[in-house]
Amino acid sequence: MNIVEIENKHTSGVYAKQSLTIVRGQGASLFDIDGVEYLDCSSGHGVANLGHAHPKIAEAIYKQASTLITLFETFPNDKRAELMEKITSLVDGLDRVFFCNSGTESVEAAFKFSRISTGRKNIVAAMRAFHGRTYGSLSATYNKKYREGFEPLVPGFSHVAYNNIEALDKAVNEETAAVILEVVQGEGGVYPATAEYLQAARRICNERGALLIIDEIQTAFGRTGKMFAIQHFGVTPDLLTCAKSLAGGVPIGAVLIGHNIKNLVPGVHGSTFGGNPLSCAAGVAALTIMEEEDLPGQAEAKGKYLMEKLKMIESPNIREVRGLGLMIGIELKQKVAPYIKALQEKKIIALNAGMTVIRLLPPLVITYEQIDHLVDVLTEVLTQTVDDGQ
Image 1 (cartoon, one colour):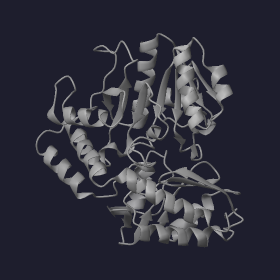
Image 2: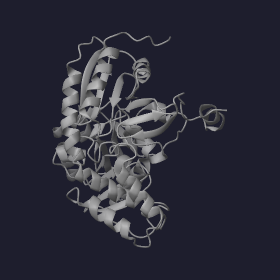
Image 3: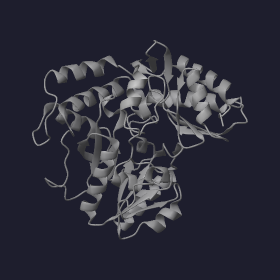
């Protein structure tokens, strides 16, 4: 049996497997088992901001794996302390951190911290939001396709229209523990928040005694042109969740914690693998690379360049191009699945965001030459009608 047949035989069934077998990566490129090169515009759902196989990440992992891989956070550790100090220095007003293993775990922790801190139970989230697949984060996720079959979910969650200040103002009251928002809704269709909306969310939470959680699992660490997307808007949340690209591809999650969070005493929460030295060493290396290579600055410049090029494509199939930095959505007037397939046939790997949006999340190290190639292929694909096979 080949690799595809072996995976199909033993896989759980929860993934829609493709026939393309990827075995290697380098920079913004992925290579299949036959050595064919693909331009990666998915970054593993936003993980590979630094690109693939960055030598400094590989070196940090090897060195730490040869020293100490795992250690529960009860015992202080040099690499954990270094990552704590480094990550909290990147954003004002959030000087504590809880480490875990993934984005959904960071959201779960933020909900627990909100409830234990305020003594309240209710969480207000946004329509179209995606916050994860475990029960708390799933309860904050809006799309019914993720929720169906798993009810009853966690009680106390409600959803209001995104970018609608009036709706948020009505929803938040003296029983609200927290409001959770994405700065750019990724899975929901690549919709950026307005400055007025995020600033109003901060004001409303302050007025009602609720906490503001900003979910930066996909937007953090340079993706939008700032180290954290919230820094575009001058708003400081009480809790900030992040994961994906924090450790250059090694699994890690984190919650950055502000001064309003109370009652975080020993035993309230924990994680066996959270803050392990291996992930922390990779995290230190990744953040150092982001600063040394100015990846946020690269994302800002390259994102502007790509956005301008995309908006010049004359196609009756395109409804809108939107995004922030190198997080870009191309909304079409029809389903995108056949277009995603057509792009892959032309050696471009992209994502959908819902039924009608092509989501582009290339590594921040993508070159301008690769961007020009991407635009050429998109122009070719999007200016023709692609058969959906139905």
